[in-house]
Length: 353
Image (cartoon, rainbow, N blue to C red):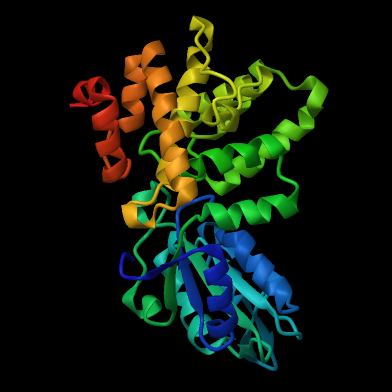
């Protein structure tokens, strides 16, 4: 469903408020991105109970019910969780993981809010959700008849939205501070092979697990074990380095201001790597691509960054090269800043080339 518009969580909430009361909505997105939580929160915001049905675990009779005989006539009795008297939000999770027979049972429910002779209470809302084929999840083709009965949107993770929520939800400070530094690590594409990957859900689980240890019981070994079992391996490595950096009082802002230097000890190389990656991410975030939009703060940061790069190149030219290198997806430092680097640090740029 590449054609569907991509929305961030706050945009999806507004979309549901306007569209879902009128027509059913289907939300596409990768696992762990928060589709279920958003629908439940939406239902609560409009004062409705949220009844969730998991498509991958449904049989047709779970929708249409089973027959009984009344006065010589068979009538189907819909399940009690569906046959309610008050309006509610019916959430059909993993809808595209159910069989074709179950999909057929959804036709009248989605289009007419009806199951046999039973009609959903006036004002009820129907929302579906599912993963995409590229997410390495269990998915099956949705019939064109079912697709044509719903309004489709895609959901993608947004670090700002998530951090705003995390601050109110009591997410562990280590997780919040890390995502502040590396917002690009909030979500990563699911792997084809069996391997943990980062999602808003996995970071939430990591937060809960970190809290279960308490401040006194938390150790570098525990942090490493949890991170490696929950998030993308490269992210886990850097999260552990971030924790070690905290223990050793290396602060990125202090390094940027020149108050402290880069870690130089061989046993601190993983911390240096994390700080270098954070340094690069912060420069990409704070320095505008257009030099005309570079205000006083951006120019001051650029000047300080050149000094830090010079110091870093004395410790490790390879690490300094990581800062100025262009990534495979084309992400790079602004051209105007690279011109200044080429002028003041020609050895580093030559190495980059």
